[in-house]
Length: 173
Ligand SMILES: Cc1cc2nc3c(=O)[nH]c(=O)nc-3n(C[C@H](O)[C@H](O)[C@H](O)COP(=O)(O)O)c2cc1C
Image 1 (spheres, helix red, strand yellow):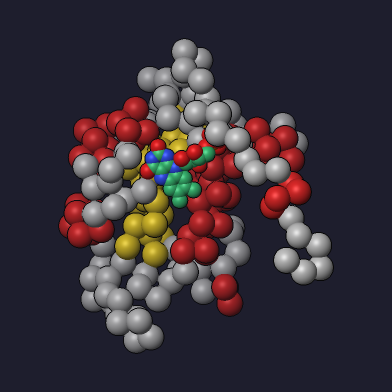
Image 2 (cartoon, rainbow, N blue to C red; image 1 turned 45 degrees about the vertical axis):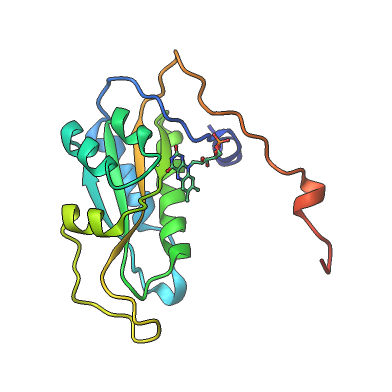
């Protein structure tokens, strides 16, 4: 699959086969996350990989729409320090989801609404503080749910994207 086809065909898929993800494929996914550029090359993002299905279910209790994690073969928590940018974390997350899809592995980002819950479960470091905002402790930006897509369920809820004409302005808004 070429890069453009991979990007435009990637959908956020929530139902997965009961089939493990091969370690070499997972390695490539993690390498893709590692290679994401970041502001001033600060590389703030860290990843927690969860493979244990019972553990994934427990992590899912920290968010409100975490059903993808219940069926996932692997979850990757994308973690950010208090002074880190969600944009940097997002670049790493999208790299990983595209590297997964290029190998036939579907994914869905899942939001974590209760940060205290996930901090405690994943034992994220709490000793750092951002002097600019006063924000303390690491956070989880998203957990990526990953697995081979189930052919029995549509790959996506099929939500439409805004048309290019609405998305793009020329020279000025
Ligand atoms: C930051 C972020 C958080 C998301 N959180 C959730 C979530 O908690 N649960 C979920 O099922 N989908 C979640 N999604 C997936 C979105 O619902 C999905 O991107 C959107 O519906 C488009 O899906 P499609 O690519 O299949 O059309 C999230 C997506 C993003 C980018």
